[in-house]
Length: 148
Ligand SMILES: [Zn+2]
Ligand SMILES: [Zn+2]
Image (cartoon, rainbow, N blue to C red):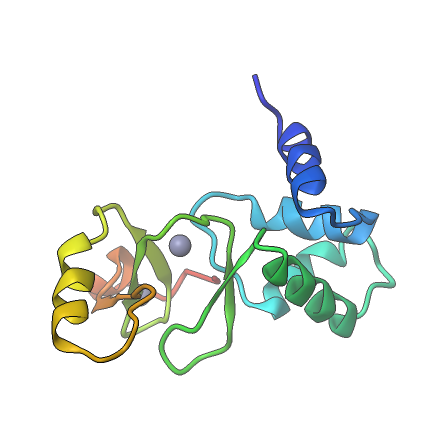
């Protein structure tokens, strides 16, 4: 079985990124599947293990990790930036009521880029798509429970 640490070490070699303890813990927090935390949330979690870490340090490390291609930065809705450990292209759905963000388990539409290529003068490099909806908690008159 490949552990998270093995994966990190492989990635570390690939990206030639120095894996400090801080960075390692930040990545561990992000490795929870389906999580799209804000820097704030990552900070709150990492702080449990490194009590003297600052929000600025977490920001900086998230920035470095996203530049190294180990974390994806998301700009969803009008809220804060979020971070995603699922690196392959995938779509998101955002709850319009509580802001919870989830992955959409659908295959990306390759045709969409083809269509854009045919009709635009741009060199189309990729695309992103965000669905809006109501999450399970908000569908009824549920209370807001999601934190991330
Ligand atoms: Zn919701
Ligand atoms: Zn995602």
